[in-house]
Image 1 (cartoon, helix red, strand yellow):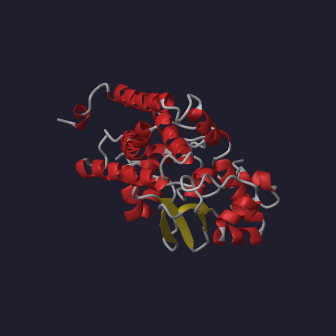
Image 2: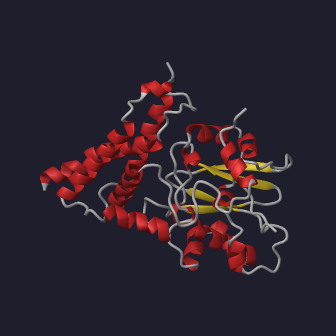
Length: 207
Length: 102
């Protein structure tokens, strides 16, 4: 027997019904309204996302003092740019940035679940939550990065940062060669979510 | 041999401007119920009905239980099913008791 027979064919419908039951109960008891979930999700779509992380990185690339602040007191740097810091406890009040250098490449993971710096990166991609990624990235990061198409120089150290209740990490990639003379907004366009997770690097704009 | 993250590498090499699975400003859930389950947990924590750490521990427990009984590459893996079960546990422990008092 293969695993696909181990799950009921109406699995999605059952899960959908379980969620509807929870939501209906909470609405009936006045805990939430039928707009609560939409309001929360709206903040993710418009206020919390990798566009914020990209602004932080672009500023760090152009301002050494800001970069120093970003990696030593990340929340102060986030506040300085007027970006959201997330609700207390849930979402990222303990975010910390780690900067790539010519000697060190950083990779963020969450081995136990899926903690992620939502205010600056938004929601994690599905593979970040995948059991094999979580296990393998901790054990053999270099091989995993190669599968992502990132061949890290063997002379370079790879550091993995495991997110936790205390700290949610993100990466400040190195500024790409050939990006001289770009404005901060143009630089921000070079900063992808994958580069801020450490599964990619920032590249100069494709010709 | 297929590698787990091949789809990502291919998309990157092809130079898609929006690398999967999340484009700036738009969220990615496979099913509407996943979005509802996610939003409910965040909303309840934001409004103080439970501590995020309690939910996080419940989620870690669910994921660990699944991983203890399945291969890491089992195609039946469903992250949001773990999330939903964790949400039900936390509601049972922290939200529903105060509802019956009210």
